[in-house]
Image 1: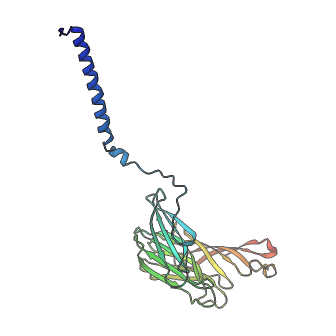
Image 2: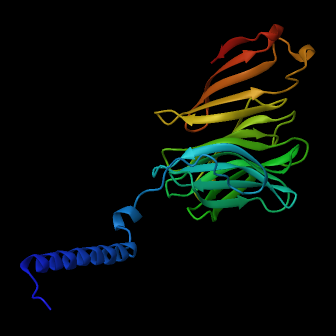
Image 3: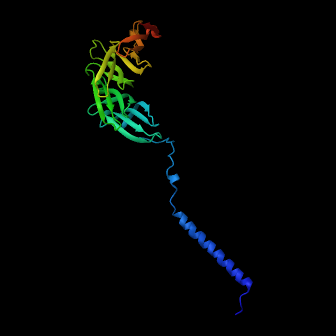
Length: 281
């Protein structure tokens, strides 16, 4: 056999070197397939666009209130049908609107939620009604962050008229001020009512305004000096023109002192179907 020349040895070395490079690349590619993704990729925040998400919380859901939370999340309140009865429901949503918790309240009979707020302890409070739709009682509930009831109060005789609470506000004194309508102590129809309760459900203030017919307080806010601003309506024969005289109130706006005293009201009256505004006190 002839001795290998320098040229043939050089070719052999180049072939072996090329083979080693190919084998190394295959091994490296195989190892890369088994590498765990970086922790930076795993910790990426989910896309906040959640259009199309649905929440199965009960039959015939109705949403009546929403509250934004300090962490960017939301409290959403309303009512759903559960075993044939209407129950109040509160949903807690994350900032990306994913569902975190569902709380239902009501028990036997129907119950509805009209408004809700977050409380200073991280829980929430809501108002509404319990009982039959036309013979209900007003309802105020204070719950902790886990949805467990701290206090629960009902107001009204639940007989001839529908008592209910429509709105509430967290006050500067860590109490709850709520407004609605009541037939308790009212000889004809209902009156607009204001309650103030502490966290334990003790009633600190109860005042009734604009009594008679179907008068009601619909919303409340607290002014910068602690007084309350309340709006309401008189729904008596609202769609019957013959009953709409110059003396038939349609809507009203009032300022109330911290002790419940009525400071002034401004009203609209239905006369001639067009209405006019009158100021009182």
